[in-house]
Image 1: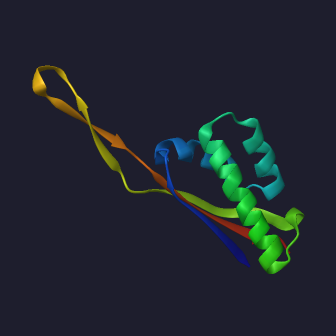
Image 2: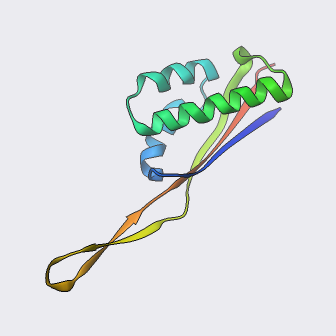
Amino acid sequence: MSIFAKYKKIRSSPQKMRLIVNIIRGKNALEALKILESINKKSSYILRKLLKSAISNAEHNYSLKLATLFISKIFVDAGPTMKRMLPRAKGRADRILKRTSQITMILSCVK
């Protein structure tokens, strides 16, 4: 059984998100929550929120126990990029790319 949870248009770049995602990939759900609570980064807060959502989906929709859940797949994709302009000297302008992310988390149950 697979439980899906998605988070779209996160205001953090995929590169920064993948640093934290690689740490929790394949871990037990409880263990991953503890790891995310100890990491002091914006992406860990977002991933903790997504993991709690996936866990509640599993408990409410499928009546699964928290102790049997683990992260089978988790991946970060690039979302839409916002383009902004920054004024520079002599009438020039630099382009600023504000990147966003989309996370997909799939929990599975250990039998």
